[in-house]
Length: 403
Image 1 (spheres, rainbow, N blue to C red):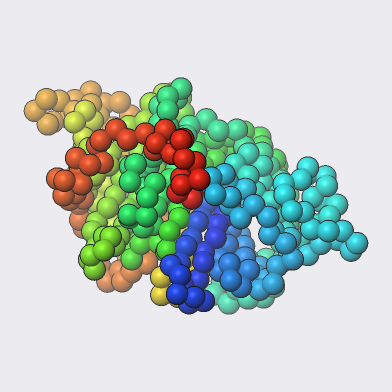
Image 2: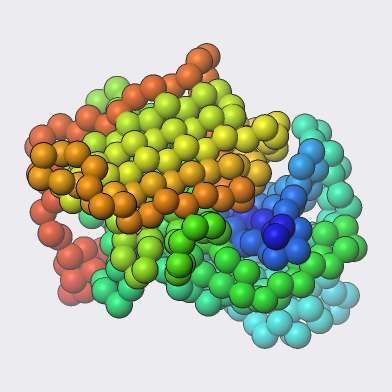
């Protein structure tokens, strides 16, 4: 059965070209899957606080829409210091004041002719193409309203949730920072794409956020939470990149794989094992990883050309720098690991034809083959059980933004 697939990226990027202060970006990526269509997805970008520039992009095969305003009427929320809430009014109704906080859906529709409001549980908005997207075909308008019920965060169900990039992500050590907020959820509502409405109920969904100066030098990403061959909910996220080391003018390979199944997170990260990969310039993604207790392999391919997207870069701000598709064919296998390092009991053997696949940055001159190699000191540091929330509970003002 087909699905309508969606992405939403929300965030802020402070341009380093506007001042000497360090650039800052925060992006939220949201994916929804609708059980009627299988060929459309959408994404939002927000950038450049100094110009109050907000970009919004909806995607479909060979189709993209981007609406940007240099002088937005009103932005609220600012993706607040510790909570996700962002809204913007591009065009208010005549005689109405733009909202300065989240408002009920009916009030938003009455006061805002073009704009959006986004929280972890509610998404609403309307945008129109302004003709600035010159690298892809466009549609004229998009509207949406939907709510989301989280199922998986990033950790075992019923337990304290984990930091995707380790507790050091709470501090400006490695950039960009990455946190998967909702590995799996269920969304209900509608999306109107160029006048055609798609309604959905309990559609599988996903969200993550990135913050820092820019995306990595180059990167790759795979996400899927619709599978065949398993009983119960399965959610997969895998990704990695070439990221800059703090202070040092050098880069390292970093990658991870996370699988939620039957209420349990199976996590493969540099500080608990080894992750290796083989990623082509486009069309082929392969991962293998193991930790002390489990082993995993996944392979994804696509025959589709993908859609070019804007992404935050350190050199050019928000620029066409990555390519996505939602037409990925994916196989995922997960095993218990025997004491001798061989594969034991198989836990998962599933497939999907609805995987989201991405490559970005560069240069991508050829296939990228590598594996994680975390220095022993850093590995031990990341394995120290640090409770960041508890640490800053006594001095909340000093809690780093984004947490």
